[in-house]
Length: 265
Image (tube, rainbow, N blue to C red; front, side, top):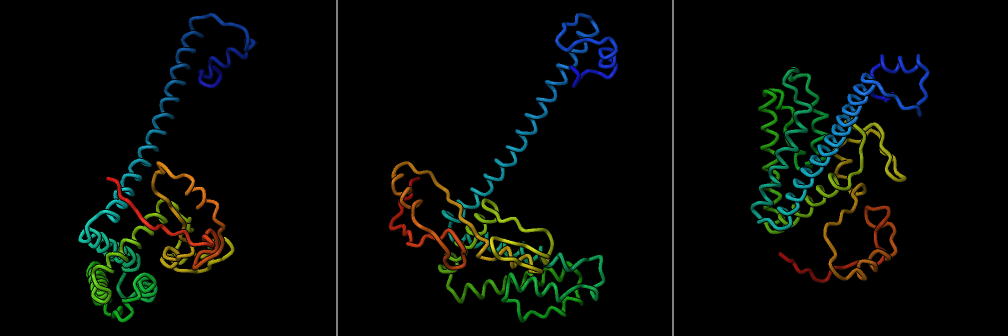
């Protein structure tokens, strides 16, 4: 009553010295209680509605992530390549647009910063003539960088062979999806990142792209449902772990090897 009633009713109750345990019978009080009850119901409804909206956001995120994983795991090689090319285009364009502002004169563009950032992500652009970008409009410069990145991608595919390239793409994309979306390591804002501490290591003034691609920040995300054989899961769980490779912890000291897989559709 005191939470939702009007100030006038509360002041009246205080002046009359009513005890909270004493029943009150009056039309005005009854109407106030009804209004208070409606406010309570509206408030509870708003809370439930907000929770449903949060759940809907999480549900859409799960749908997107699971769709990406299904594409990479079960999709055709052509679909995997298309997804990888899309990521190359989007990543390079996004990084370039941070430095090639169309509202800034080309002579004032930070091309050194652009070069350092892109080389952290795509070292194959080492020989790209960044200085020539000043003669282009911002949109044209971004397109030129994307074209160069795609040429580097095609050259890498020719070097490795298409089958091996698809295998690498599946591994990398799954790693990015699992770690960036499902088991993320929060990285502070800014580029470069002024200071970031993870476990026992401190990073200072490090390019954001370098942290995002650092293997030591990767985690583990397991998808699946165990329908039988929990004894095997328990054995894996009880396996001693420690440092290994780029990971400071949680690596099985005795390798756990999957010898066979059966895909059930």
